[in-house]
Image 1 (spheres, rainbow, N blue to C red):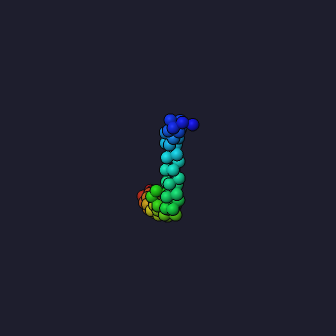
Image 2 (cartoon, helix red, strand yellow):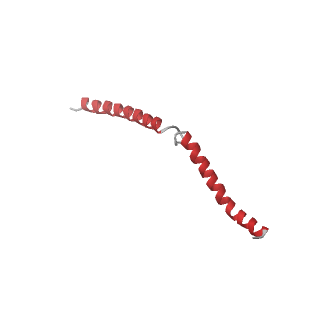
Image 3 (cartoon, one colour):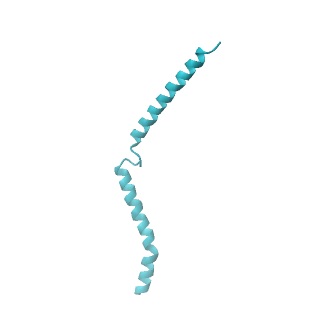
Length: 71
């Protein structure tokens, strides 16, 4: 193979290899952080459970108020 063949081969495959390298780097860095951008899965679930509890408490208050106001 001549030098121009090698340069055309490298220039055509280089973006592909760069994308693979970026993908591997991001995969490993996200795995070290727990795999999520905004925190670990446990933290997300705990926040969701807390929000559901607040919503349930508000819905119970609304239901009690409606029961009270029944004729």
